[in-house]
Image (cartoon, rainbow, N blue to C red; front, side, top):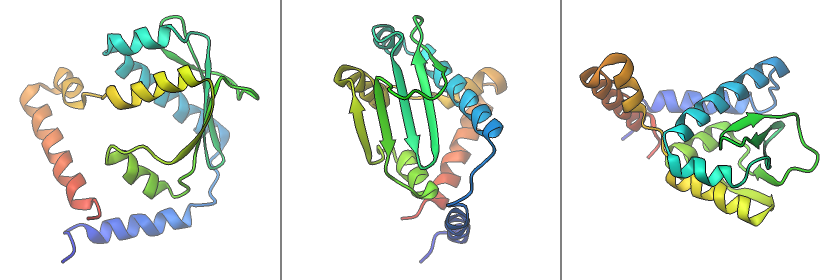
Length: 169
C-alpha cells in the first residue's frame, strides 16, 4: 500500500529527472550559496565546540563540488565560514558523487552522508566530519523565538508528519 502522498514523491522524482541538466544563472547560485552560509554560520554560532574547532583551522579553504555546482569557503578567525571565489587548490575538496538531487536530498534528510571523494588535508577533513556528525540545527528553538514555544512545537510536529508521509519507505 502506498503512503498518502506517494504521488507527490513520484512527481518530485520525475521533476528531478527533468532538471538533471538544468544550470541556474550564476547570480542565483551565488545568492543561494550566501544564504546557505548564513544558515550554517547561524547553526555554528550555537555550538561553541564547533567554533573552537574551526578557529584552529582559520584561513583554510574548503571546496564542495556537486555536479556542475561548486561552493568554496574560507574559515574565518572567528570560526565561521565566508564564501570565496573558486579556488584552484583548496585545502580540502569534497566531490559529492550522488548525481540525483532527490536522492541526495533523501540521503541528507535521513541523516546519512552522501558518497563523496575527499582530497586534501586530513586534519581539516576530520574537523569537517566532526561538524557533520555533531552539529545540528534546532529549528524548533529558532521558531520558538519568533512564534512562541507552543506554536513552534506544533509547526515542527506537523513538518515531521508531512516529511514522514512523503518519504519513500
